[in-house]
Image 1 (cartoon, helix red, strand yellow):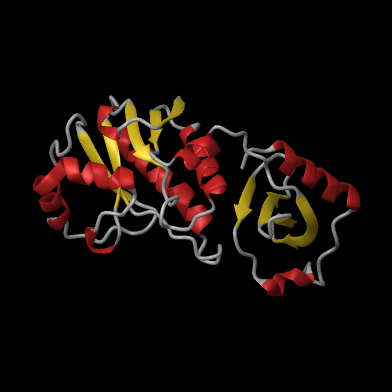
Image 2: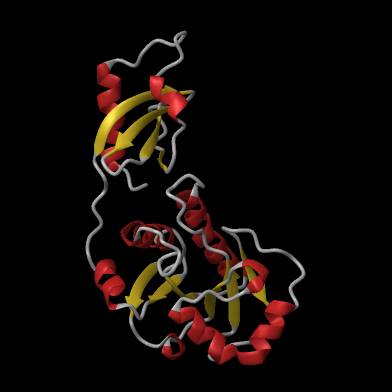
Length: 237
């Protein structure tokens, strides 16, 4: 529905639910926004986290029982990915992280959700990419999402238009997708089928596929490569 960014105290924001980022063994992350929520929740929040019997996989979300942090009716937790130089599919996992939070909030009947930018503080994620992913997924949900940051540099970055990386080269095609290397060293996968305009950012592409196509496959015509490059440029991955 909509999203916005604020530097206000997260506890002063009016929303149905808040998102808290946690790590292994339900430890709360050191991001200032999360520490502020943890402080407000106190021992009640800590007991709710300790009582969880299930491990929270990275990229997923869960709801804690009860009204733990005033003024929010619900408290959601999520496990965000750390940046590992893209080889752990952390870009795709961060997308799933937001999708999990938004889907769960919708199931709870929420209309508004407040949360930090995930993976941007001590997690080493490229901040521009992390903010872009947050906005892309927030733009797909009917929720009104409020992102809170108390880092001025992060807030300033969130106000700048995102520039999509340009295509550096065509690698080849694999099954139903063409693979393009981007100027930032990552990859984009574009569906070959004309009726489907699917573009996916691929964080890591096995070097063995760089040789290009299966020798039994016909190479793509240059006109088709140009069409697929245009699909990438016009898409919002």
